[in-house]
Length: 104
Image (cartoon, rainbow, N blue to C red; front, side, top):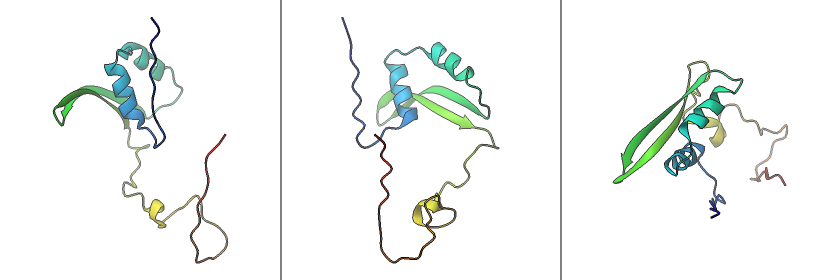
C-alpha cells in the first residue's frame, strides 16, 4: 500500500518542526543522526526530545549552534531597516517597493 505525505507550505515551513513531525511519524532517528554526522560542516549539534505543549506530546528537534556560529542579532534589526541590510541600494528614494525573490 502506497502512502503519501502532503505538506502545504504556501506560507512557509519551519524546518525544526517538520523534522520533529517526521520523527513522530516514524522516520529513523539513527538515519537522521548518521546523515547529519556525514555533513562536512562543524559548529552545530542537535537535540531530540519529547515536549508537551498545549496538551499535545510531540517530538522536539532543535539545532544547537556553538558560540562561533550563534546568531546574536536576535531582534533582527536588519529586517526593520536598521544595521546591515543585504538589499540596500545606492540611491535615495522615499517610496516603498518589494523585492521578488521567488525562483522558478
